[in-house]
Length: 427
Ligand code: SAJ
Image (cartoon, rainbow, N blue to C red; front, side):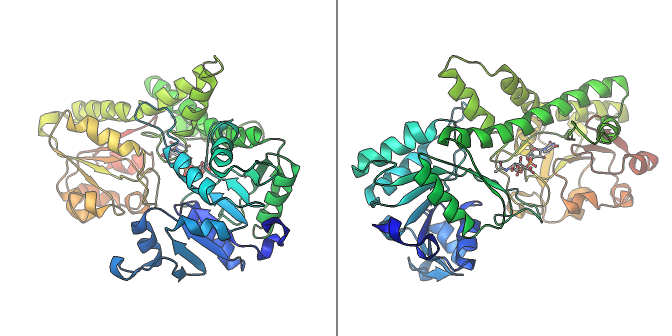
C-alpha cells in the first residue's frame, strides 16, 4: 500500500507538462522529490529536454524530472497530479476532452493508496461528476477508501517576476479528511506558501472560478467606463488611479483592447454552463464576457475615427498591429484579442500587418523598425516593453500618422505634441 510511505520520499507523477505542470515538476525535483513528468505530446517532451527529436528517449531525466509519454509509470507514483488544459469549444461550452482522456489513463494504472490531485481549472462538481466516476469505473477501486482524491486549483501568473509556483498561496479540498490531509502533506513538503483547506471538492473548484470571474467582471467594468467616459471627455485612467487612493474597497483594473489568455476569458464559461444545469442564468458573467469580447471591435472603431480625424481613407492606410501575445512580455497568444482585432481589420482592408518580438514567425517584418517604416497607423495591442519604450521621435521619423494605443501604454502628450494622431481606450 503506497499510502504508508512518508509523502516526502514517495514518488510523484505530473500529468501534463504545460505552463502549470512543468514548473510544478521542476519545483518537486528541486525539493528532492522523485518526480516523473508525463505528457502525451512528444514534441513537448523534446522541447523541455532541449534534445532533438531523434535523440530523445522516453524516461530521460532532465533537471531532476523523469520525462516520459509512457502512462505505465503512473503505477509507481504515490501522488498523481493532473495539470491538463481545460479550454472551451468554439461555442464556449467547457471542453473536458483532455481531462477525461488523462483520467481514463490514470484509472487504467490506478493503484490502491494513491492520491490523485486535480489542479486544472474546472466547473464546480467536475471532480464528483467526471473525475471520480471515471477513476472508479476504470479501476474498480473506491474513491476515498481505496484511493484518495483532492483538488488544488492552479494559480499562476505568467510573466510575474515575484509570484511563482513555490510562493503563491493555495487552497485545497478533498473527497474526505484523509484525502485532504494527504494533499496538505504533499503540498507542504515543497511549497513555501500558505495552504488553506476548504470543506469540499466543490468549494475548491468554485474558488478558482470565482477568482477569475471576479477579474473578468472588473475588467469589463472599466472597459465599459472607458467607452462611456471617452464620450464625456473624462480620462478613465485618471479616474481609476484617483479612485485607487481609497485604501479599502477598491481594486484597480484597467481598460484595454481586450481580454486574452487561457484563464480569464475562458473560466467564466465553466460557471455559466454549469449553472444552467441548475436552471440559473449568470447574466452578469455573460454580459462581462460580451463587453470584454467587444473590445477588439471598439478598437477598430477607434482606428476608423482616428483616420477620419487625420483625413486618411482606410483604403489608403497601411496599418501595423503591434503585439500578438495576450499580455505584456510573454509569448503566450492563446485567446489573444490581437487575433480578433486582426481578423476584423482584414475584413475591411488588405493593408494590415502584425509584429510581435515573441512571434517573429507570425510577424510580417522581422524588426520593429521595418514595421514602423511601412505603416501609417500603429495599433498597440500588447504592452510589450519593446513597444512602450519606442521614442516618439521614432514614430515621427517613420512618418507614422496615427497611433491607436490599445493598452494606454504610450505617452499621449508627446505623441500629440509631435503632430501624430492619438487614440487611447478611454483616454
Ligand atoms: N487585462 C485587462 N485589464 C486589467 C487586467 C488584465 O485588460 O486590468 C487583460 C490583459 O491584457 C490580458 C487578460 O486581461 O489580456 C488577462 O490578464 P491577467 O493579468 O489576468 O493575466 P492571466 O490570464 O495570466 O491571469 C492570471 C490568472 N491565471 C490563472 O487563472 C491561471 C490569474 O491568476 C490572475 O487573475 C491573474 O493572472 C493576475 O492576477 O495577474
